[in-house]
Length: 217
Image 1 (cartoon, rainbow, N blue to C red):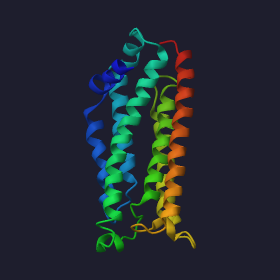
Image 2: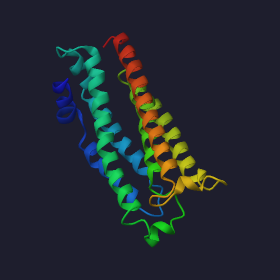
Image 3: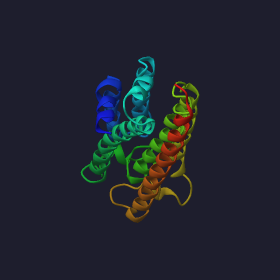
């Protein structure tokens, strides 16, 4: 597995994937839908799948002296690690906005969603949807990915829209809490988002390995 993962990072990955990790810092932007940064991170990962497909990476990987399941696991591990790197940047931004910048005017007067633990929870949900719909959809054929990516885009922006809208409803203002307000609610939502991410990713991985075994490359 270390060798297939090294191949993913050195040979298969597009340089854009690494550049797009920095979009996690969009969580610092006031007056902008911060969850769009999550979409751009996944767009960067999409570029690696596109580059790998055009280079015949899947066939090359399948010809290596490894199990077919290891090819799938390598891709998923690469995706999760890239998502994890971006999430670290998002966490840093959220912690700074919850502490040193909690009372900053641009954030307090921000008409859009605040960067808090609920935002991180939704970021994890979006990453989970990407893993389930796009990465899992790719391994149904190991070649076609346009339809699953378009489907993912639609659901991604539905989640972003819900994140921007929900806290405006009566009794749900706690979703847009500042600083350490509503910490019980915020931590519960983050835990739920983490479980959703893990569940969607594991289900997708299991289905992808089963589908990839059936493909005659």
